[in-house]
Image: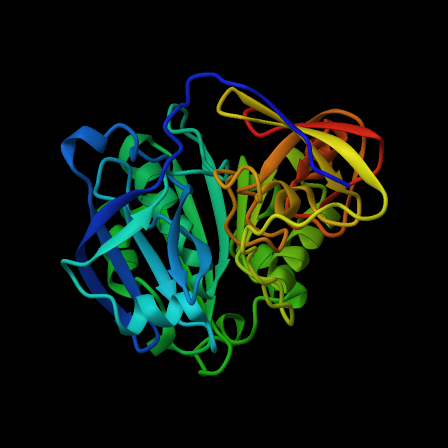
Length: 365
């Protein structure tokens, strides 16, 4: 079957990538760095970020376009900086941690993401992070403490003290804000004086910490970021203690045992077998395509709309979120959207399979 396409042009809103100069590469520990970007004045507004947002980096390797999303770790108003931890066999992280140097240029997309606290209101925030999950938390904590009268409690899990990312900056925040910032390090492979602070941040440990450090009903917002197991354990513990779902915010960095799928090469195959007419809306531009039902909307539509946003393609980051305005889709997996978002009609285009003859997905909603 031949693919058909109908497009309605509209002004774009500047979703393009730009080549930004690397201003600094700071070694955080043996396997992690912080990469700071120099944003020219004419792009300052486009790269203004909210705490908790991320930047998508893009490069082409062996003819394949690769993208990865990394959370901004700097406070609002500072130069955008991302934290990167080496992933064994990681194509992108190995390049950033071991090879990239100041002065080089990297293609960077504008900030995205909704894992963001409100900087116009003061409140009590509890953040639970493990490993590189600290990256957005550092931005959020620093921004909240500087812009509001909020109190922040951070429970941070790592293997050993020499694997802690941003250890000095977290200590500086503690020194600067005193009782308004409570920092608790929990180490799984290095004994600490108190047994409470030794072990993994699993459900049992979190129950102990909530009994001792902060009560479940003492926070206005809970922020969870890290690997799948920690995030789901923390959410389960909090819901079990009566914390309403709307006060729990989560972001995953990876799902254990599951590698991101290979990226599309944007070839243009014909459609064989069952298909749907899928209308894609992005930046006000509408494209109607005949797409196969057995391929996620993002992968199939990228052959004709290479500007579609994505990062992990694993159902984790939420960069490719769409509103399903017409028709139905089914998702193979979902680690980024809340139940409320799914009920409201949102889906991850990297996981969404068309189920009806006609489907409309809106990236702008």
